[in-house]
Amino acid sequence: MAILSILQYPDPRLHKVAAPVTAFDDRLRSLVADMAETMYAAPGVGLAATQVDRHVQVIVADVSEKHDRLLVLVNPQIVEGSGVSTLEEGCLSVPDIYDTVPRYERIRFRACDARGATFEQEAQGLLAVCIQHEMDHLKGRVFVEYLSRLKQTRIAARMRKQQRRAM
Ligand code: NI
Image 1 (cartoon, rainbow, N blue to C red):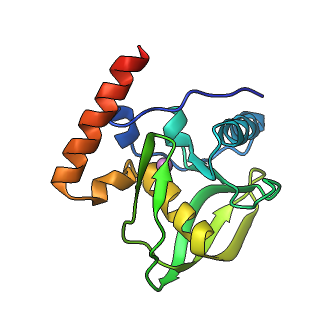
Image 2: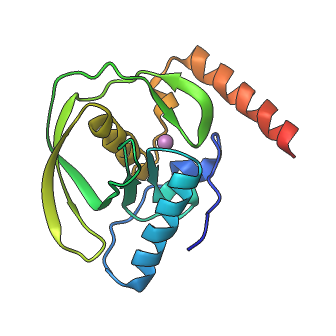
């Protein structure tokens, strides 16, 4: 396993659209293992393959307190959504920025696991928001892009400043 580096907004690679996974092989399982390790180390509650510059439809998430309930979603789809969430979200690609964006409070989703078996499940609250956030990454969308132009300009300036300092 390995810790992968996470792309930082406004990196243009965060706007790539992920392709569906077609081969459920060892390469996929090794990507999933690396993504889980990277997410836990960050630490974060969710990570999309897009964020580690792999443009395939793979998400890992774990919103449990003990970090012992890893959820792996390959080729995820939202089947149903209801309610309006008011939870603030953050992103490992946009450190230190937290805000609310339009999300369902409850969802029903369908996905494959790392072996290619399809499953359907319901989620609410933090997990529901997390899955919608990560699915946006797979479409090339970062959560701050829902915010006002003014906020986005400020965030991009702040990120560039941080990145210059880190170099
Ligand atoms: Ni994110």
